Length: 185
Image (cartoon, rainbow, N blue to C red):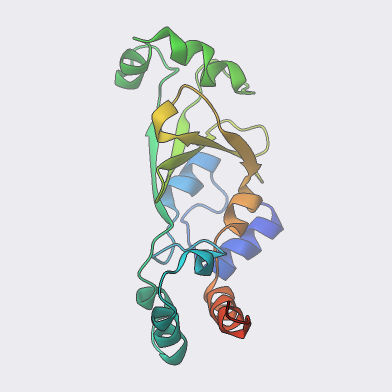
């Protein structure tokens, strides 16, 4: 099994699937799918109309389809900005800022790892994992703002912490119930 038992459990709770439980980190992430939309926990803090949440709470259908919000788009792809001879390398090495930016902050076991781009948030923060992460059972996920793509890392978190940002259907329903249990201002 490529991932830790905690990650396997969270992936199952989120309804995610992937084709290579015994393959490489890259194979597992590239084949991974999630039910859509992927919604972050705490989403009700950003809801403008409580009537929308009330309709969702009363409806017994597909909860995710009723929440008109997608906080994260999971669409993995490979980038090779540190691999000489690749298109990505040519594109990103035109600017010296890249070489001293992200590249200098990566703990990698090879000189030119593949970046597995996981996707973006609705606010254009991109997340990536290194294909040769020394801890594939719970790899480090790096966050980059769209304005500093491949120039700087905003923050790091473990893959488990990354997955815990997102809500299961049960957690969505609990959050909506909690929203209506709060005293109104």
